[in-house]
Image (cartoon, rainbow, N blue to C red; front, side, top):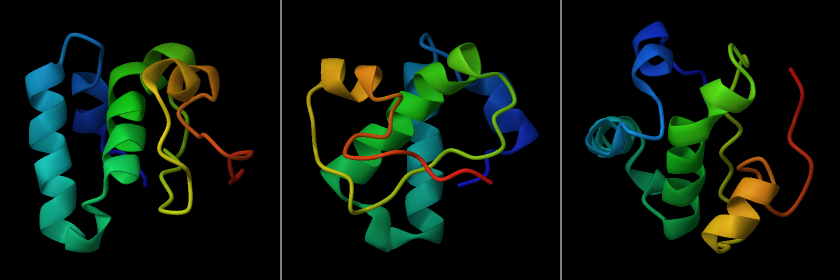
Length: 87
């Protein structure tokens, strides 16, 4: 997933409501993404990606990744279950 400039600007830990709005926009384009694991990965990236790695080209959100608790999600850099793909 490649966040838009507005998405990058808006995403942050305090943007809970905006994260849910952004997730609903993802689902409008990709209804099959509506799984707990995909939502958790997206929101983790939404809240923390720009702080941890500003300007990262993509947010790797994949359906094969396991559903994990919040601590594991953060420790894995929002990509639980394996290394993230590099572009």
